[in-house]
Length: 460
Image 1 (cartoon, rainbow, N blue to C red):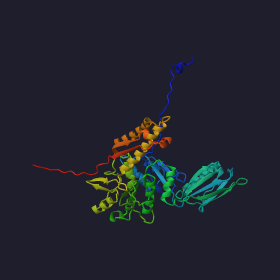
Image 2: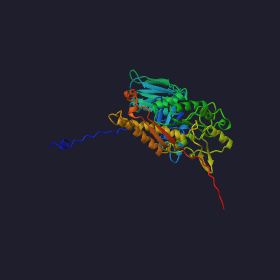
Image 3: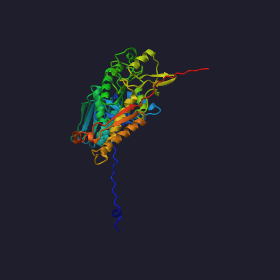
Image 4: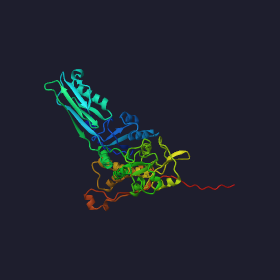
């Protein structure tokens, strides 16, 4: 029997529920120059950024415990409340090669691979013992990794092809058996190193831009300057760390003074006396470097952006130190974050970016901009048309109001006022171009209390 219900009660439901994605302001990238040998998943020019979810994953990937990546992860995950993800970005060092070995044809019964690697004779591989060309390739890969795993990583590409990734390798192969016997040729290609941090960070962002905060392994001032300018121009939030004594002993000549002079408002500088290079000529992080910036991000990125001051924070697994008041004043004059003990409580100092603004303000306003864009765009795409009427203007103002209300709720703003035009006051040109001008808001920062003065009188 035919169903008559659709004829009796005709119902059409149109979904207006599409919500565009909004980038996260709680994701942390650790960018470092390191050898890709032994790291899995692989880092190569096509895979510049990888995502990890725990310190165990970092360790399982093969990062040495003394590497910047592992130590930064250890500091991030040591915080009592910490962010869950860590992105790792790769700056390509000198001396990385990709060598491809290809069998010209499948092996047959009686075939034997006789071969040497970098002048070392390897054990012959027999088709009869292994059973197939693919298993012979598997055996070559296993032998290469066993013998030369510290120099390069061998991987099977397909049944007739393998790759070596890392240091340069000279592989000579002679195949016997078959009529005629196949050949196996190895072709090496050098992978160009990143010439500087600007190029490296650009490549990382091109591959993955899902992160907001960044810690870099750079400790030399020149490299930190490259990183700082890139971070500023890409509206990320960067933490640079240095133990340069010039920071506490002189007014100029260090990364903090330079960053302040350049009015950088998306970069903070963290001073720690243990963050020194073993060799001033080589930008390799010292084994004693506590990587406090990674701990700082690990703790603070768990907070709603802008809702928490970055002052008074205790960082697990980061040692404190003592400074004279003169040295403290020198750091604070450069808007540097220090980490010392006050009344037996380890704590960070003011939590400012190089320009002098507070980190929570930058973090919060970056979030607010994205939130406004997200809510207004959502309103525009979920209707057939926003008409150019006073009612239509309210369809733009309403999500703006919602975003600003959230900013007040999270103590980014204390209050705000929105100003917008009436349709009658908009020019014909703007109407013709379907552009709504002059929607403005003025907000008062909620700020934070970092110090107080209390006067008391005691009488009999």
